[in-house]
Length: 174
Image (cartoon, rainbow, N blue to C red; front, side, top):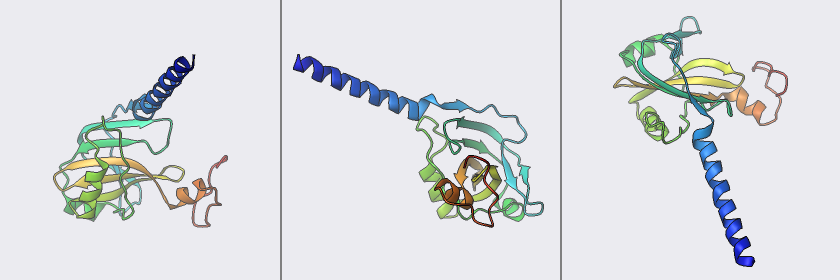
C-alpha cells in the first residue's frame, strides 16, 4: 500500500507541476487582433500625447491574468533620427520576458540592443492602465517591440504604499 501511495503522490505532483507550467506559459495568453491604426503609438514631444507610427508585420499577445503581460512585435521604416526628433525617449525601459513560443520578442536581445544604442526606447502610452506605461523600442534595422511596464507611481502603489503627491490618485481598490 505504501508504494501505491508514493506513486500516486509523485504522479499528482508531476501532473500539478505540468498544469502550473502550462497555465503560466500558454493558458492565459490570447493573440491580439491588430486594428491597423493604433496598435503602435509613441508619445509626441510636441503634444505629449500618443500618436500612431508607421508599422507592418504586427504580432501581439496579451493576458487578463496580469496587466503587464502585453507583448508585441512589428517592423517600421522610420529612422532613429526621425524618431528621436519626434517622440519622447524612455530612459527607464526594461523589456520583460515573453513566453518562449512568442519568438519575435526576446527580452535579453532587446535589452542589450537598448543598452548599446542599436535600439531606442520610447514612451508609448503613459498610464495605459493605472501605474503601467506602454513602452516601444525600435532597433536601427526597423524591428520594433512593445511591452507594458510598471511606472514609478505604479511601483509605489502596488507595493502597498500611498501614492506620492506628484502621482495621480489610484482608482478605488488599490
